[in-house]
Image (cartoon, rainbow, N blue to C red; front, side, top):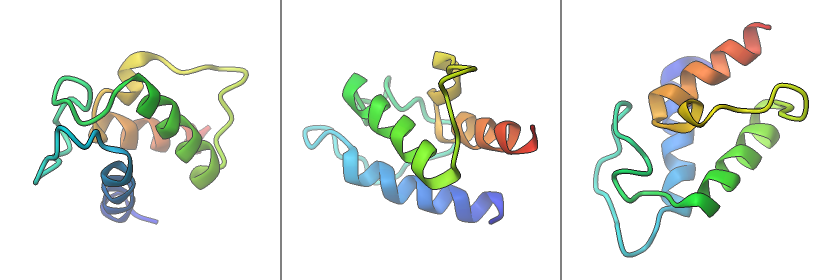
Length: 85
């Protein structure tokens, strides 16, 4: 799956977990997911679960840095990095 398709799927997923009191019409690749109000700390856990289930990633050994989930672009870069190793 190419980056653009992964981006579409990720944004579609984010729309299912976004905070209802902060609906966003547009989610860009650079937008901070937390600063924009799109997601909260619980949603970050849901994103990790999504990544584990969708891309068969395992965070038990390497963990995850907060910056890896900062934006859609950061998440896509993280997926590419993990898939390359």
